[in-house]
Length: 385
Ligand code: UD1
Ligand code: UDP
Image 1 (cartoon, rainbow, N blue to C red):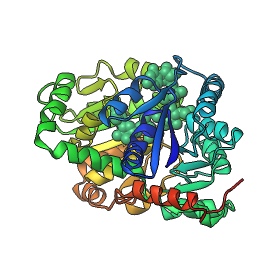
Image 2: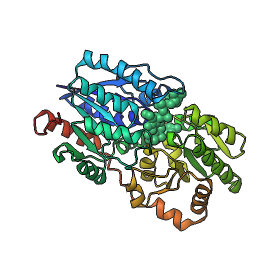
Image 3: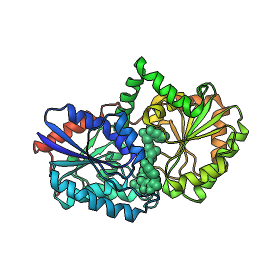
Image 4: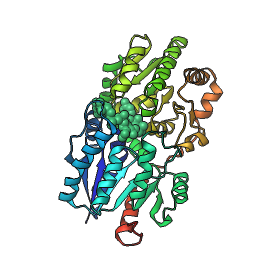
């Protein structure tokens, strides 16, 4: 029985690792040990509850408006004693957050091999996304096993001289998670509770008006970027009074301040708290289109046939753009307004995006990750260090 330490810090890590944790739990040859680093406190708790994740170690590192250095230092000090006590056979980290970087580094310091889920995403620009591009590069250097979501990500790793025998194209586990959630929502007994949660926040007629679903949180857009984004939403709400603009606002105070200041009084804008995963998927399913800077949301929405406009200047996820499911619209007010207006007004442009196929996987990524782990423990895969 191999003991696998799964480290997760933020909402998207928990969502994307949930199917892996369940697959490990079901397997007879693995035992998952789950560590929630506490980088996100509130936003992680609802995912843990929704997926019924067995958390063995809950750390308490989050501080209001935390700095990257403060967070990094607290994480390193808190993760190491758990690794020492548990001495796992391998650590799994997912994505590009500070928890990923520190989880991989602390494991390296203890000589514990590292598997990196969602490896090989790159913009090629150290400052965008910040600090995620650096976290990904560093995690790659520290990992033994690289689970690339796409062929492109696989290619990026090989360009960086990573041994091809250690890289596996798995698809993105976010699709596994989405399929788990949709299966639950398709069971009749699940629907009413989700509907009533949303009705409480948005009113019982929330499904009756067409709406744009909005999320945003990227650090490189803090300040002027968020001012532009909020102004664009304000303009759009005025231009399209029959539409609603539903925005679950991230808990980061640097996001909440401009959003609330600019948009809280706009009649057809609904600012709500971050939505638990179940209701969020229901919103994704019911919306007309998505305006976001989120990585996970742009991977999920195309599976539900929703066009995604990404408010960023650069992307590590060009697969969606190539497939036609996603458009990069930057963070300038005018461009965002033009691009949303085009999709709302031009049926053909809308249909083209809505009908394009999702390039991020088939919902079987977790199984492929477990197969690769078995190969590693059977000695078929060379160790990086
Ligand atoms: C983090 C990740 C980012 C990821 C995002 C997912 C880093 C550097 N950033 O960004 O890559 O895309 O999560 O959402 O790893 N807060 C709460 N409660 C919560 C969560 C956050 O109050 O449950 C507030 C706190 O004031 C906290 C702040 O948000 O200090 C920032 O949290 P942090 O994890 O540092 O950055 P995010 O912007 O959430
Ligand atoms: N999500 C959620 N509730 C929300 C907003 C997003 O459950 O109110 C989910 C979404 O379905 C996706 C993930 O959170 O799976 C994306 O997280 P986020 O945008 O915070 O981070 P990123 O993916 O950009 O790293």
